[in-house]
Length: 428
Image (cartoon, rainbow, N blue to C red):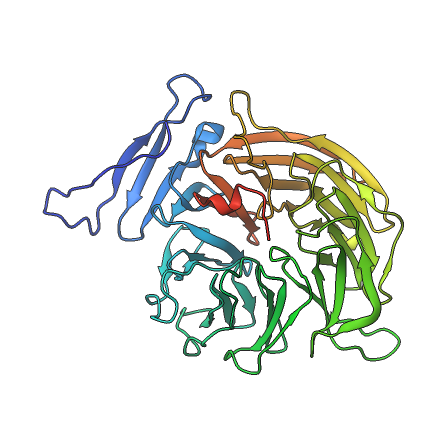
């Protein structure tokens, strides 16, 4: 029932090096009577191995990075809280609340971690997912510090930059965008920051952007060369900006009915989608700065990012109350089922079931999304018609599930996190 606390002692002293200790992990209420899953702890690799054969009976109450979908499942991180995770298709990268970057092999669960936190970044978690750019991994911490790591070794490629100057109460909680050596990210005071890989050549402009909206970058080149553009949510609009100086593209601000807390998704041809806090989803053209079709009402605030269907056909959207929809590139919407917690689970007052860190992912015709109660929801998507069918719900409670990502083999990694930041509505 809930978190499991234990101490391990070796028969050969206090060291557990080279030992595998098998425990039994009892699921929380709602699982089959008497169900329990073998949980093997490997101290050399700092991971738990969960037998995948237990299927839906497995509950994971250990915060960290969980990897499922293979012959075995792995819980990596040993109780640490993480900000978010990314994958290059082969490895999974996540940043914990000490500001350390961890690289995980999703096939084995084995991992290694970057060196300790620099004195310039004490105790600052990652602001959002690590951004993989070629051989580099870019991390921005919640207090605006920047670090660039080598992807293969996790060695710091540059000394920690001094970071950007934030206001007294401002934080960075959205993932940055990286393009052409520039790192662009918002803060919770409405500023949009741009800096190079060393933290130099900084610009900051208050555009009333929303601190949870990670910028999307699109490099469009139609009817002549155009600089890469930045697309980001603001208080009552979607802004389209020149990446070089963060100035607005003439006539390219798409009005919205409410605050845009979600992150836009933009396909390579310039077609974009975003949701707002009134529950509307907008389809638009980044090149012309004009809407496509009319705004579609999903029926609940859309704070998490839309996720794409194949070939830019549209996006999957999950609202804060569990309502789902597919919005096609024509701007039309196909409503889907409402996702709910398993029987017996109650959402605490003031907590959203899906917030800005609960964005869906898709593997083929299956979409997955985690909620703030620790449930992983599966739906099937007809990628031609947009029809959505609800599927299995697997309970990993009692903590929030965030940051789903998937490798080339179809294994899915996500974070189980105790942070209240992922459970409550964002207030700027």
